[in-house]
Length: 572
Image (cartoon, rainbow, N blue to C red; front, top):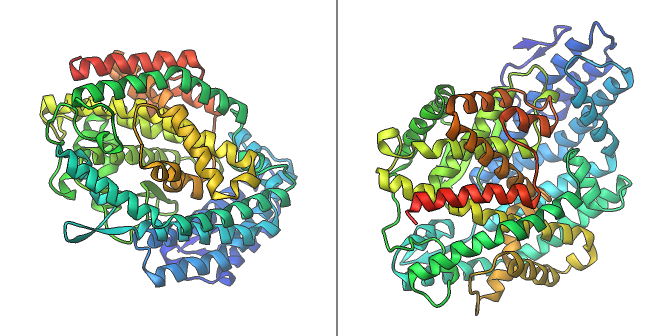
């Protein structure tokens, strides 16, 4: 046990609280709420609030993770739903009470300026009437994960997941690739109606929550909920145009080069991952243990402290990396706040493309670990853009260490090939980000139209053709049109995706710094991570050695660096 300031025992481990009813949790909130608050007591108040919040949020994280690990686990689902129904709404009411108590006190703890701004925004958004709706949103999000996580098919006599077919997309046998792609697309389309129903219910709830909070639309509500102080919806639209101007031509050049190398009349969806020179797919590891050991070696070369953090995750079994039936889609990290540990969840299927996502999530995990050294939880969250900058920067810093003689996975020539693949996939990422972001702006600017899934299909198709030229989808228009159903952010985390594009600009700038002076660049990067959320986004990026900008000029310069590196890496 540990003790709050007035000696009320609080469990040392959040795992002791996994099955607690609200009545057991409530007493701790009540105690904090009843305390007198002054300049002499505010630090103890914030410290005890942090310890309590860490435990409640870790309980939520562990229960949610248990559902994602096995979407068919009825007991895990019941435990999580019980938490959502009984503990979550009440804890949110109490969090609002504690938040209001501090704000009304007029106290301004040292280093708390930005935290207070965030608290004011969150407090203004809070409505008790929205809590049951948030619970229902959580239930529907789980339903989405169950549907998509249960998408299996028969491939060559065996049941497999759609994700497990990804290695086939890298095989040189084009007919086999096409057959696998068709089967996967057919399986995904089989859930079209079910996902449309989930979508309509989610959209209704989100619109109602915004109206309940007095907002004219969901986008403005969500902007405040995500604490986006440094960029506006119009800035995002400017970024979309910048991508169209500066990146789409570069991505089109990549596609055209691939088409010529493959000697095809047109590129088809099953031609995008195979090596264009006819080489066998990269096979960096034979099993998950080799993947983990290799990533550890790479991260150790980036920075010993980063490597040590990943080693702890390996030792303490905080990595769930394999792909399997009834595992929720997506790749992410979760934070166990009280335990001061992070957990990585992903779907590795034995490809070269598995290495970078694990390094990416390791960047998130290390960033969280560094920020969690700050004393109060209100100071730790850096916001999504800088969080993604940290993860993407880890990718770019690690790329130079992928060769075996540098601790990694490949021969020197294979490492150059992997680097080229990373550069090219990063270029293609921006146009896709523009599609996802523009689609979500359309949805919440036209909610009545978006309530009809057929309109969503049409809008996604229009945006796809605008930002993603160079691939022939003839005969598979339905698969293209329903791409929004396969982007889980659209369902689970609305308006969370543009950040990847902004973060990539910052990551490439830091990578360029590291080419010039590796030691200084990594030192600045680590110092910036330790700032947590104590500084605004532009200052966090500046501390890391990057500039917060996403105009066509800045983006064009970054893409130019990447195309130059791509030419060198691929020997063009």
